[in-house]
Length: 190
Ligand code: AP5
Image 1 (spheres, rainbow, N blue to C red):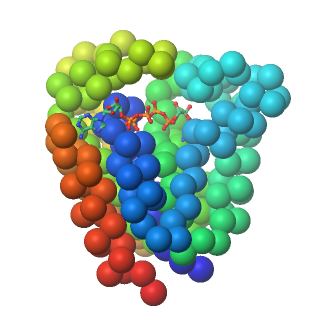
Image 2 (cartoon, rainbow, N blue to C red):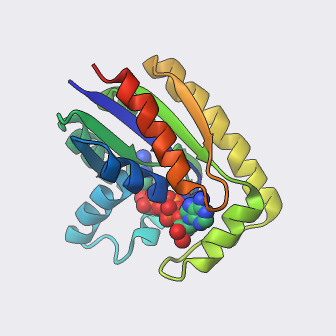
Image 3 (spheres, helix red, strand yellow):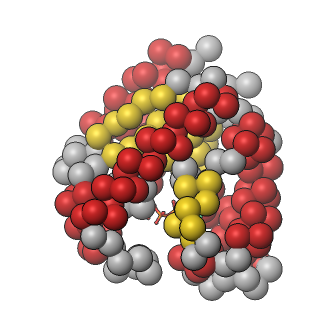
């Protein structure tokens, strides 16, 4: 089996941008967008009409979609599988883990990458994305989510034994971040 990198970050840090660049520039890499796999299943089951409705579903329904996506990704066998996902989801029932024990164990990550940006950058990136239905945020709520992400990240690392990288996706530096990750993964590749 090849490398399996799980890339996480709170919405608006730019993780999807970085992941797409990484996959495009790495020979034999496959993208696994956890949210897209869940959404396609949710859409076909008529549970949701857009991806932002998923986190508002009862957690029990989200869990079924989550398990479906984890099983699909666990069966991917490419040289490098890059999983674009979340450490936690802000649901009406509270913060809910995106990588609970059974999910993270099934996916067997070899590397965990947390993408970060400043609260100001995140707020700006979220508000400029008019294609999505984002939750309202304040600087305090973003600071809280950034801290929460680091806590969830250490749990995932402890459960899987995978090393953690924390990368800062500064304004205009998305390509540089993707290149840095590609370099690290080329060296780690068996
Ligand atoms: P997901 O598809 O991951 O959506 P998201 O949470 O909204 O995250 P985004 O991809 O929109 O934000 P991003 O941080 O990646 O930013 P982007 O690159 O777009 O998840 C959707 C849903 O799926 C979740 O809400 C949840 O319901 C479900 N889900 C997923 N995983 C799950 C799991 N494990 N368990 C349960 N549910 C799960 O960039 C944003 C903007 O910033 C863009 O305009 C971009 O051009 C810009 N930008 C990026 N980088 C830079 C930079 N360096 N400088 C300037 N601009 C930049």
